[in-house]
Amino acid sequence: MSAPMASAARGVTRVLVLADAPVLRRGLISMINETAGMQSVGTPGELRRGLTLVETARPDAVVVEMGAGRAATLNVVRDLRRRFPRVAIVALATSEDPAVVNEAIAAGVRGYLMLNTSPTLLGWAVLAVRAGRTVVDPQIRRVEPSATPVGKPLTPEVPLTRRESDVLDELLQGQSNRQIGRNLFISEDTVKSHVKAILRKLGARDRAHAVSLVLSSRSSGTCTCGAHGLTAPAPAEV
Image 1 (tube, rainbow, N blue to C red):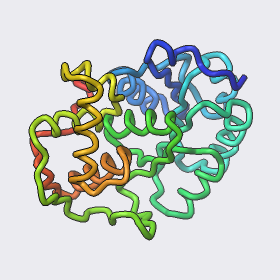
Image 2 (image 1 turned 135 degrees about the horizontal axis):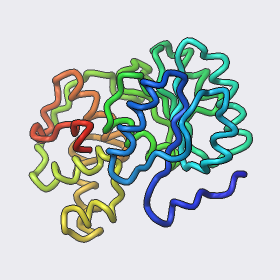
Image 3 (image 1 turned 45 degrees about the horizontal axis):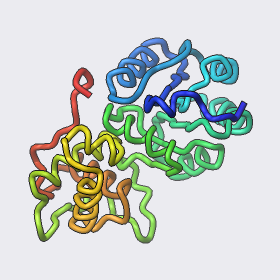
Image 4 (image 1 turned 180 degrees about the vertical axis):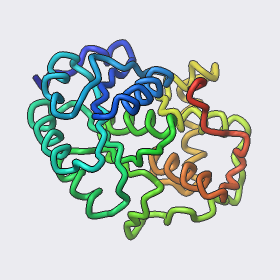
C-alpha cells in the first residue's frame, strides 16, 4: 500500500488526523481545511485505528497526536512507516525533551511540532515533510552545532524589499515557486531570484531554514528582517 497517493497531480495534500480527543480532532480538521492546498480526508479517529483509517483514506500525510500514551503512539507510527512508507507523518506533542524528539524521529515521525502550533507552521511542516525534510518545532531548543539558537535576533544587514517580503510570506505558507508566481503574478524564474536573495539576506541554508529562522524570531519578538507586516494568518484566513 505504499503507492503514491492520487492527489499529487491535483496539487492538493490529503491529510488524515489521528487523535484520541474529539475536540482536538475537530480543531485539527478545521486548521487543515482552512490551509490553502490541504484537505482533511477520511474519517478522523483514534490512534489505535490508524492502520485501518490510512488504508481506507489513502492520505498523503498523517497528523498524529502524541500525548501521554507516547509508547502506543510510536508503535502506531512504526506500523504506519512500515506499511505506508511514502505517507508523511507529523506528530503534535506536549514534550520538548530532545530525547523524546529523537525517539519519535527514530520511530518514523518526520515532523515534530508542539501541540500549541500555529496553522501556518502545521501547514508548512506537512509540506516540508512531504518534500523529504525533517521538521522540529522552533519552540524546542534542540540546537545542533551549525544551527541558529532559538530566539537569536534576525537582523539582516540589508532589509528585505517589499516584493521579497511578499515571497517570504508565501514561503511561510509552504507554497511552491510555481504557486508563488501565480499568487503574486510574477514568473517562476523571478520567484527563484527573490528566494535566492531572501536566503542570502537571512543567512539561511535553504527555504526550510529560512522559514524556521523567521518563525523563531517572530515568536521571540526579535525579528527585524524588514518584513514586520507579515503575520501568521488567523485560522479562518489561512
